[in-house]
Length: 339
Ligand code: SF4
Image (cartoon, rainbow, N blue to C red):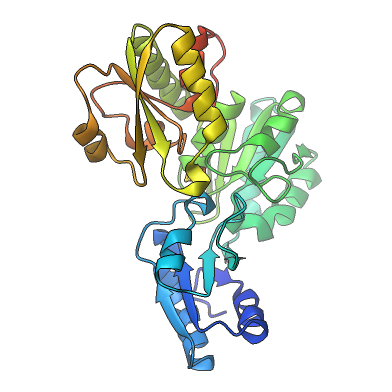
């Protein structure tokens, strides 16, 4: 691994399959943010396995829920390599390998000590520690420093859609929720705000983001509160809706039949109407194209982050599954996220 490469890819996983199963055509699915970092690894593979055809999928790869199974079938690929996420559901396509992409960046000890001083100044003694998969290799390093400075650190056991203890993804914070009653705050190792905000919405506890990319930390609790007030405004605007648009995920990993049945049952039980739409990639333009005048609000069952992160500017309220359940059951006191 050269110094300038920010990620280590589990190339050995691909190589062992190349040696054992000898695939001839491989489709590689990789998140947009990792595509360019992966090209050196791809060149190494192409050099070593000259008789294999490698194809990079240009589509976005938001999560392992968005597995390019159909693309692999249509292209007659005999192996689908999904980079950067852990398995989310059992795919129909039989030959899938999940390849880790791990950041090589590490927050400095001094910076983590500053974080510890900050949390102690807030009277915080017990923290939940979670991370996104790219930063798994540094979890014990961070945990040890936190514990050396006499913070109590709890890491929740794996469950739901995640593979490892303490891991979180955009729609599953169950590891952090498991320890939520025993901690004063959560520390999450991640870049950007996406996962940290989700963690705040799912736990309603203070969240401090430890960012290996910027070697900095940030208490994002106020940002979470701002998001929460926007979400409650959408919920309140939906309370008088007579007809809902229910968006169903067209990808297998985002098609949640039980959830859809449950929401439709709730809609019917309240004497309301609904219209079903399916979507592979749901954007605000897609929503504007399908919108009907008689629909008052939408609920998105594919990915619970879309209403919050991508569709907040849409003219009508767009709800996550958890918010839709709040509205349809009238249980508004406790914010329900994500499901
Ligand atoms: S459903 Fe959304 S948040 Fe969950 S893994 Fe898929 S893209 Fe990520």
